[in-house]
Length: 339
Length: 161
Image: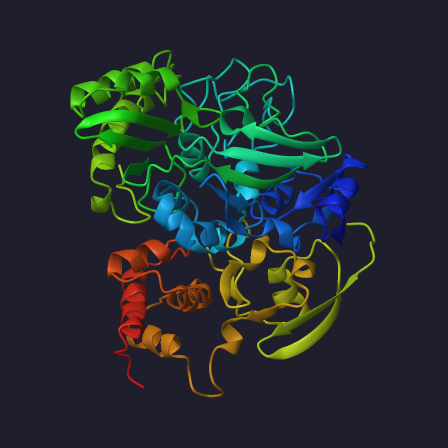
């Protein structure tokens, strides 16, 4: 562990200035991931710029287009239990409450949730190669113990998965990530925020040095009637997903008029296949139709040995989540079934 | 670690005011234990996985191991040492004793602080929901059933006063 300087900044501009001028400086929000990574010698900030007191980023507000804006510094717990979120975007509440523990949700921020790093155990082990930690050194997970690893969108350089639950719901809801940096403001569609590993697994997302997530916009399409977040993991609570599914529908009678399905625990980013969602449009809510969509979502999936089970598991999880979405009131808050 | 200058930090801990000069990387947990000798708060994993270090910060349960002490300047911290009213134990402390809610006791301070936070949050109604919202506190000695019994007893107001 290295020592570091610490400074609190209370405006977005001053925080950006402090970090963009110094590539060894990092932002500190909830700290639940960055402090842990620093303790493991995986992050080496020379300066932490504490942004927790930037009041403008700490609110949830209604937007003119009937969507809502989630401040980047609002805590995960405050977001999940916010009356606007609970009422209009219950899929997001459910996904947040399926992740981490109550203490961590009290600390972790919305912006930080997007920026958390993988929990791949090779990434955490400084004694082995890892192209995410040490670019070009290789991925020992591919021929190693890879029970928790990716089956979709991986590369020969990295098969790590992105661990967030919240982001699976944000992907399904087509959220927009608002960021500000030295070059000005950008509004990034959620599907473009995180990256696939490709040749550069060291890059988790498309943020630039000095850019800060200011807020996340949820569009007016709320999917508040038919939704489900199903999380499958090794223990009943407080574990990362092996496979998770956010499923949401808009219905016209007994016909699906719009479908959204996003997967967690299977790729380097929340996994969505819009063509599979299109397949469900105008169809009935039958197991056969859900299976059709699942096959399309999972086409191209590759198991690496220990994680082969994730492919059939994901198919069944998609079908089950779609069935659950038809009757969301039957779901237990915060909890998913254990394997 | 090399010498860096301390940062003057004001904290209220268990209703006592402190002004401390702290190095930036000192966790709230290490500050409590090593600087103030408040060793009731336990260091289990030191990585946010076990909940033994749970304290209340401005009324909310947090993990002191993943918190930089300097970042809590101006906050009110409550630890296991501060929850009793003088010699009168907190209802959860009594309930833990009555329900055999510990063997080794290492997770107990974190369990109790977490339970105080959970009851204040008011989100858990059923036993299942209490278990879910207490899952950030691991018990490894087999007392978990007693822990949930103790919390349910206080929650349902059937504690012996």
